[in-house]
Structures are given as structure tokens and as C-alpha cells.
Image (cartoon, rainbow, N blue to C red; front, side, top):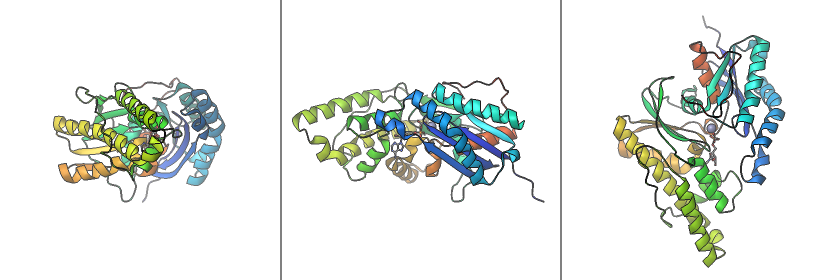
Length: 340
Ligand code: KG4
Ligand code: ZN
């Protein structure tokens, strides 16, 4: 006799994407993301515009997610939402909406840490994708975070190192901005890097103790380099776009890989899972696959739609918290910063 699955609606609104997903246990039935293009013209996310767009988008996005899943809201057993970290105004929209809906439907509310979700997205049941076994190391690389986390179980996570200034996604986006690319420029650097020589322009790596990262020095170094070259040749960027992108991407990947190697050395753990928007980067994906052969690691790279911000990853944490009855009460608040 088959038992009925647990249906969970998940809502993600930590930054500039309004997202909703419906999961049946650990399977994704729908995963809807409304991207906010408004920020492109400002060269970065404008928090007030993001909150306003979330307010406009949240009802239709949830509606579409339920319709795509073929589920009515009365069939839901829990509502998971991103509690933090993120932009306060953005978090409040998703959090208040989730709270109200859970109250109206009289079902449990589940508060989810966005960074936890970027890690547990590997446990979404997808054919063709292996799931890591515990313990493993997670490298979470996004526009807001850069962390190496030791994951001992679904709920026992320890941050081993993190950025002391900019996140790796910011390093990509700020470099792209210096080159005159629209926001977010990370994917464009990735695109042009494919045609370029990664050794064309050497940049120095920052010296940071242990497993922490720093990217702000690289950004300054890159800015001065471009300014100097453009002063000599105004067409420098246009004429060397591919080589410039390949070189900065190569340096960023080297910084990440050196710290990962150190983390493996220090912990003895050779299973590596990546997550976060920057794990969509084709150079990082290829380098990890090479490392798998070279160092005998086992690497896990999520399906593309689970790398950048999405609600399916919030839903999978929701599912594991639901199984353990780890519910939030109605006094739960959004948090711009949050620990595991
Ligand atoms: O996880 P995410 O969607 O949002 C945050 O939680 O920050 O990550 C967004 C970041 C942006 O900085 C974006 O430029 C970067 O991920 N990104 C990439 C690529 N795709 C997205 N960076 C480099 N190469 C890519 N292909
Ligand atoms: Zn994210």
C-alpha cells in the first residue's frame, strides 16, 4: 500500500528573485522563479525596488507553482519560507506571506536558512543525480556568500571558512561592471571566458589565513589594471574581452580550489558538493570534474535550476524539517543574518 506524500509549498524571497515551489516529499513538482529585471539598469540590486517587486509577484508566483504541481492549497501539509540571510525588506514579504497562509490553512510553518538550502539542494530526488553521503564538504558560492561548510548530517553543519569581505559572486559582478557589462555580469564573464586564454593576464591571489576568503583586493587590482590598459589603448577591453574574462575567472577559480584543497587536507573529507549561483559557472564545474580525477575526490554539482536562487531548495529543507517536526511558531521573524 502506498502512503500519501507530504506536500510542501516553499517560498524564497531573500534577494531579487520571487520564487515558489511545491514538493511531494523530496521530489519537486513545480519550481517557479520570477526574476526582477528592473535591477539591471541600476547595476545591482536596489533593495526597495526588490521588496516592491516581491509584493507584486508573490501571489501569482505561488498560484502558478500550485497549478503546475496540480495541487490545491488545501492539500498542502506545510509552508516553508526563507527566514534569512538576505535583504530585510525582501525577506519580510515572503515571510509574512508564508505566515499568513500557514495560519489560514492551519498547517505548520517552517523557517529555512537560505545557505542551508543551497547545501541541501543536493538531496532533491532527481534521476541522474547522485546524493552525497555524510560527512561532506560544501562550497557555497553566491552573490552574497562564500563558505566552506562541513556537513555531518542534515542538521549538523559547521562553517570552516568564509569570506572576510566580498562574496565570490560579487567578485564576478564587480569585475563585469568594470568591463561595462550589465548586472549581474557573472554569467557574461563565464560566456566570454570560454574563448579566452586564462593565462593572458596574471593576477595575484590574496593571502588569507586558513579557510577564509577575501575578494575585495582582487577587485581593486583588476580595476587598476583595466584603468591602466585603457589609458594606453581605449579599445583594450573590446579587443581583449575573452582573454580578460578568462584571466579573472581563472584567478577566482584558483582561489576557490586552493581553499578546497586545504579543507580536504585538514578534514580528510573528499566528498565535495557545490551550491549557490556561482556554481553555474562552467569553468568551476569543469575544474571540479578535473579535480575529481586528479585528487580522487567525489564531487557533486547540482542541476542548473537548483544553483541560482530558487524555492525548490527551500522546499527540500522544509521536507527534512517537517519530518523532524522542526516547526516555527507564529512569532518567528525574518533575519538579515542567520547562523546554522
Ligand atoms: O545564489 P544566487 O542566485 O543569489 C545569491 O544568493 O546571491 O547567486 C547569484 C550570483 C551572482 O553574483 C551571479 O553573477 C552569479 O551568481 N552567477 C555566476 C554565473 N551564474 C550566476 N557567476 C559566474 N558564472 C556564472 N555562470
Ligand atoms: Zn542564494
